[in-house]
Image 1 (cartoon, helix red, strand yellow):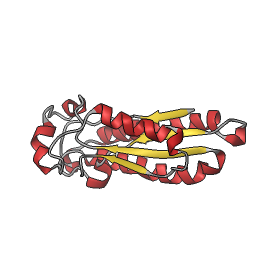
Image 2 (tube, helix red, strand yellow):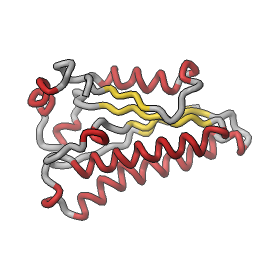
Image 3 (spheres, one colour):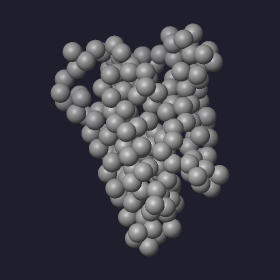
Length: 167
C-alpha cells in the first residue's frame, strides 16, 4: 500500500515583510497540516501494529526547502522544510511498523504551479542557473516517486531524491 502526499500551493511572489498572516496560514495549512493529516490516516491502513502489511509513504517536498526561495516564496520553502523534517521523524517512528517514509524534492518543473506565483515562465528566467540548463518534467518526478513506492526501495526510509537538475 502506498500514499503520495503531493499537497502544495504557493501564492504571488513577494518578500516575507509584505505577506499577510492569512496567506502564511493558507500555505502552512495546505502544505504541512494537510500532509500530516493524510499520513495520520494512512498509518491506520498500513501499520503492522494494527495488523496490516506495512506500506510506503512518499512526500513531495521541494528543493525550495534547501534553497530558501528568497524574494519569492519563503513561506512555501518553510512549509516544505517542515515536510522534510516530518519525513525524517516519521521514517524513524514508523519503520518498525513496516512503513517506509521518503520524499522527493523537485525544482523548476514545468507545471502550472508557476502561474500561481504570477510568473508562468519562471523556469526560463532561472534556466541558466540550473546546472542541467533545463527545467524538469512531471514524468521525471513521477519516476522518482514510483521507485520509492516500489519494492526495489524496500530498504530505503528517511531518504530524499532531489529531482532538481543539479540544484
